[in-house]
Image (cartoon, rainbow, N blue to C red; front, side):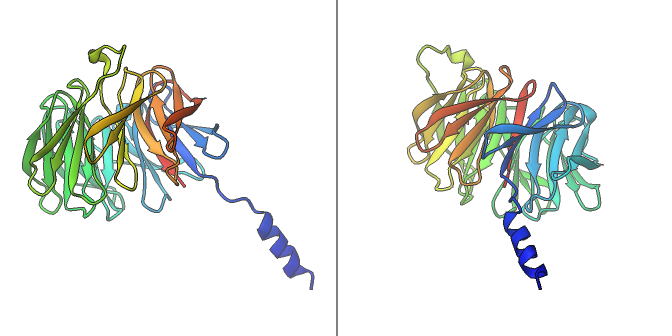
Length: 318
């Protein structure tokens, strides 16, 4: 008769899994796992060579890592840190995006000037699509019908039909486009241009330009203002844009496309990830080898967390 109370007691004291931020360290060939509750690194996990892009499956049971110099996308069990298998990603995978079907990965292969589509279940290449020179950024529309690849040297965003694997439009942007994202409603596409120093916004329905966002930071030379990664708040009001060696994140009003403020970070801020409740924003700072934690409500940095050498990508695990 005492068995049931003991089991209930045991269940009550079982700790819940803490939410985490996973950060790729491209010079260390590792991932640093940050506990969001304590803001401390709790695990350092080895990966293939030069990990950069990182994303989770929709159910968070798998984590995908672009091991660029290993020419592979690695599939990892996030609970154990064990590499389960490598996917045939093509040469030098840099960034990727999972399709809403949670089965296909769309991967930018920088050295091959192609976008590779991989079936994660059969571990096979479904298609390779010729794009511009040095593809990097990847985005998928919320309805899954369109994938974007940005090509750094060609200075374009390529609009790809996911059903036919054909490019149906090309949008010219400023020099060296790095990152792309659709807004949550799918109405807009945003593309950052690192050397051009701008973020271009397009109307998704007809690919027409809506705005070009520019940045000016007092005391910072314009050549150092290099937009790379960015994230949107869930309510669609604010975009946070990492500005590379300018060592700041820009706060942009998404309705007026105006910069509202700048937040100081570590050196060479590259990519960003929100906490699950979007109350905190984590930035990867490559040169200083750390992560800046930003309080979203106050738009102020609250902590710096040391990670590995040259942190690059970031992803949240709830």
